Length: 166
Image 1 (tube, rainbow, N blue to C red):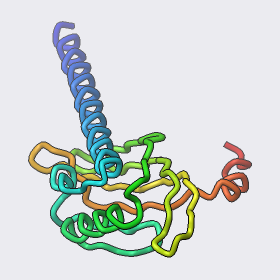
Image 2: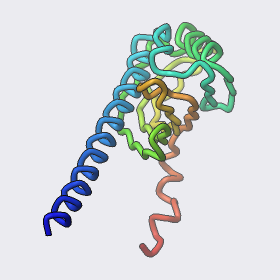
Image 3: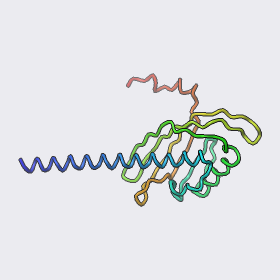
Image 4: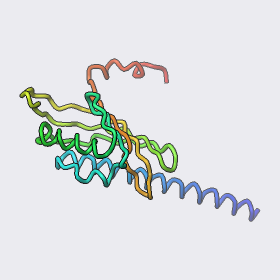
């Protein structure tokens, strides 16, 4: 009986430790997403190295592809200097799915305020969603890939999964 009790104790300890590690990982990833939002709102991407891998990639909302942190940082800084310098981003939700000990998928919903294009066209603020991939390297969660899209509110009403049997 003592052996069974000890065995069950080890199993429970392992489950608790795993849950604590997972919660700590989720919290660390959420902080990295906050760092991304801070870069947007300060219009300064010089700290990207603190939350992105050197080989990260990004596909922006209009399909431009940037292949490494140098390109991702440069492109974001360029657009914040020229188009987004007066915008703000609001974090509307982060959903983290830990795939294994070193990989996580993140859905990040945000709102980006109005902006004006260089041609003078006023673009209204929008809800967006990004799919982000994070890798744990040397104990830190870092963005390694991302893609963002605008959420079409009209299309959302016609999402077929809203009407499926669950």
